[in-house]
Amino acid sequence: MVSFADDHPSRLRRSILSVPAINVRALEKTHGLACDAVIFDLEDSVFPDKKAEARDNLRRFFTETPLVGREAVIRVNEIGSDYFAEDMAAVIECRPDAVLLPKVDGPDVVRAVADLLAEADASESLRIWAMIETPLGVLNAAQIAASGRTAGGRLDSFVVGLNDLRKATGVVPEPGRTYLVPFLMQVILAARAYGLDAIDSVSNDFRDLEVFGRECLQGRSMGFDGKMLIHPAQIEGANRHFGFSPEAVAEARMIVSAFADPATAALNVINVDGRMIERLHLDEAEKLLAKIAIIEQREGKLS
Ligand SMILES: CC(C)(COP(=O)(O)OP(=O)(O)OC[C@H]1O[C@@H](n2cnc3c(N)ncnc32)[C@H](O)[C@@H]1OP(=O)(O)O)[C@@H](O)C(=O)NCCC(=O)NCCSC(=O)C[C@H](O)C(=O)O
Ligand SMILES: [Mg+2]
Image 1: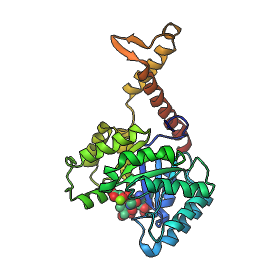
Image 2: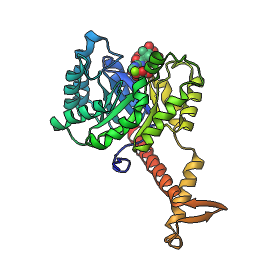
Image 3: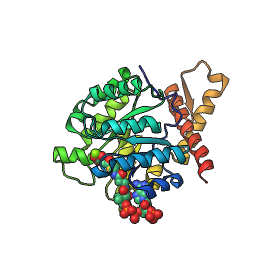
């Protein structure tokens, strides 16, 4: 199976902040923010007449003051829209870490964009992220995720868009997201089956950090890697809820050190303080510690 989990330089994705590419002041602010990734949005947050100006802002940003130490993602307009070709030309010029495709209904869209990137000789490190935010997108999530295998291996992450999904399905917004949970779990399962990350949807009410915190906890419990954000005030909560407690870090260190003992070299299962620990726990512990290393390195750079 094609999986990029091991070779991606920065797969820490607790907090993914969206910034309208038309808002130059907000673009500048991203350098000082502690989010794990930034989505530079050319789609719904940019008025139709302003798309060209927004693309120019991104060209300038990526050339003059590119983001350091965090993933940079450009969200383009829908394939088939009047803006798509010029958005993709901007992506190819800016060379972000990923292009985010909105309203992906099926695997053909991912394959078409992968072909386009290959034709443009774009670096293989330029990944594709797909927004799952339409009824067809949810129904076809497994086929879309599987298309990562054939689409030059570029598909890397799903991002859920509940504003569009609520609009299309009629599900009423409520804090527990009761009737949306089945859709969300389907998206996570499809992502996991094909080695993709899964990012939870934005929370529109950026002043109510209590409700936001509960939604983060719920998303973390469901298995999401992180959350798409719309406002800097949401970054701290997302980093905390999708992050790692000191106890979890200590336990990961303990598991790594237990399996580093030569006495366990030929063992797949060991007894650590009365608990069964298997090598699958070692894999998890190593991944967690790799994320901690990224956080520590970044904190050094940002301060
Ligand atoms: C929602 C906002 C329009 C609110 O902006 P504003 O009125 O400026 O808020 P504040 O006065 O509280 O802002 C305080 C300072 O923070 C800066 N700021 C605000 N938002 C951002 C941001 N996203 N990135 C960076 N910096 C930001 C302001 O500039 C203020 O700075 P200063 O002037 O120095 O004090 C705004 O937050 C916003 O535009 N958010 C992002 C909107 C967006 O990207 N939308 C698209 C993604 S949502 C989505 O994808 C939905 C999905 O598709 C679905 O279907 O669900
Ligand atoms: Mg949307």
